[in-house]
Length: 153
Image 1 (tube, rainbow, N blue to C red):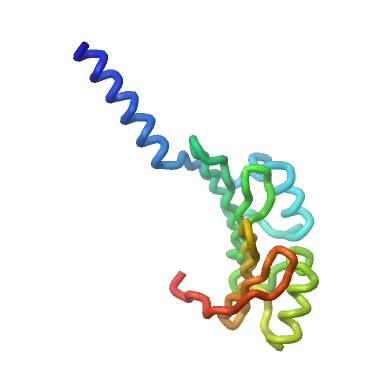
Image 2: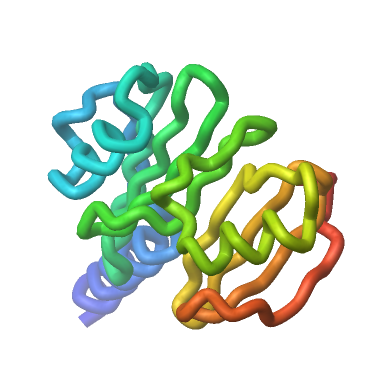
């Protein structure tokens, strides 16, 4: 009975520690990304070189992918290869990744500011501007608010 209890505790401990810590893998091979992610990179960042891809494999969550381009841009993809965030640092996010209504609102109300990041959440978009302002829009592109972006990130 004591051996069974010890075996059970070891098994539970192994599973719980595996659940708490993702299994990460690092590569620079585009082929390890889902097809949709490769297509997005080819369409919006055709000349960019990949510096690193971090593949996060979770036991209870799905795999996600963090791509860092040599120019500093970071792109996150979900397990199906759909982008969830694009951060171009000081460069502009490719126009096709931002809804026209959002682009128009930024151009009209934030003259001269560039869209340098976009985060696609379940219920809204967050748009980072070159002047460290973070804008929120609903999924239809309607403006919902503004806050100062935390520059300590």
